[in-house]
Length: 111
Image (cartoon, rainbow, N blue to C red; front, side, top):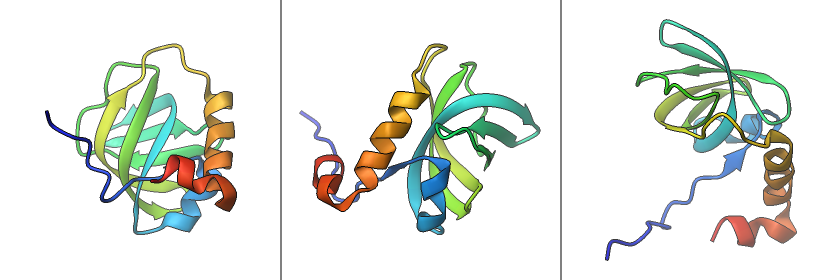
C-alpha cells in the first residue's frame, strides 16, 4: 500500500493568507473567473481575485484546487491543478482556512 507523504505538508490558504507564504508552496481552492494564455484568474474563498501562472492546461471545471508556489500576496505559480467540479462551497472552505491558520488548531490541519 502506498502511503500519503506527510513529511512536507502544504497549507491550504485563502488570498488573505497568501502573503504569509511568499516563496513557499500552498494549496488554493477557488472559482475560475477566466484564463488568458497561461494566466488563470481565480476567485479565492475570501472573494479576492488571484492570478495563477499555469504550467498545465486549466481543467474544465468551475472550481479548482491549485497547488504551487506563492510569488506575491495575489499571485502564484501552479505546479498541479485539480478539478473540484461545478458545485463547491467556498464560504465553508474559507472558514476552514481561517481555522487552520490559528495556532490552537494548526495541529489538526498540519500534522
